[in-house]
Image (cartoon, rainbow, N blue to C red; front, side, top):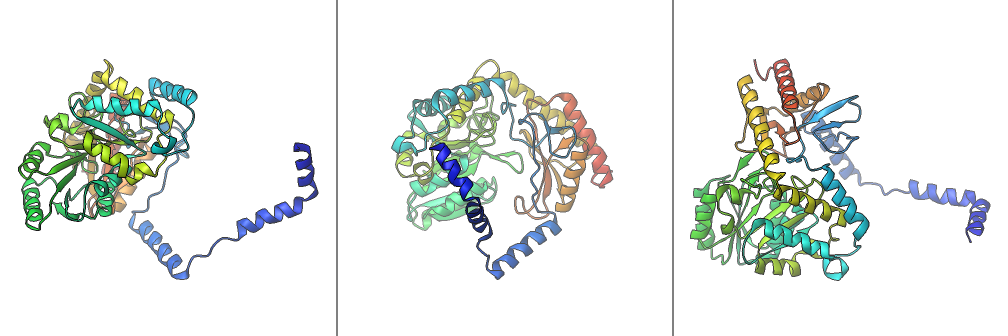
Length: 432
């Protein structure tokens, strides 16, 4: 059969080639108005310094990486690789083990034929990680999906969702999918939260759900959860916390902002990710009240209509949790916080304006979007990989370089970064 098929191709090469070329050439044309609008938008972004060009990494994700065109290794200070586990040997080995034992994927959503024993084992491991009674965990393809699924499933048009004004885009999008009335309170302002909850009650809302980031990722600020819990309980509301930048990072044992504030049992649901501190790949989850989790399994659209997590991702996440819970975990956390303290101290002494507190995210505030881009480019030439953030990722005129510490960074690498910041900062007149 192979010989016969090959002979058929040889007899009709022009016809096959013509068909391929026709398919390539017959592309749909954009309406002129849309094409002009999009082109103008992109031109404006380039002119304003807000266009986001992607740098190509040619090595695994580690503290020191290679970037296409850089010519030599650069130190990476912009990954969410807080514990340095993205290319950790135990994580990679477990991912490979699960890949070979359980296959590449399931080709199915969970409730049809996409649930393997390893998925339930990882959900149980995450539930045990938080050590709460009457709890369960549901896995998603990402934390973005977890946020997209929770509000629409739990709330009706007779309910209210009260969201912090600086919540992540995935929370904002998830809230928009819900039919509930929407209220926003000022960032971290529990008095305004209290006022919004009273307003929701006055407007006849039945169930009131409060949602906040545990850590506001553009600012490196931890939400005041102890005070938030007090207000939520006073109004008999539900609390959902997105701990994507806290899981594995914040708290004495890395169990997040609930542990940091001592309020973990008072949080109804935690949404988080497997793609940052816990191995750096993909995957997310919602963990908490088992009754709510049961409903999410049956109604959450991102869960019901997305393929299950790949076995390799499940294995990597399980290995990361094992490392965090072992004797290796405490030294990693101690190293991370020592690195953050050292960087913040030296940068402050040099005269830079820094945002945030008590987190491995340390924003260097610049204000001007173009200057943020220029500084990031200049630092890359000096072997430091960082990214400038500007509108619409952060508010206008609050552009910054978001520096992220990792337990994998050495003191020498951090000193090299600070020295480069000082040199570039003086060139750009950011510091004197």
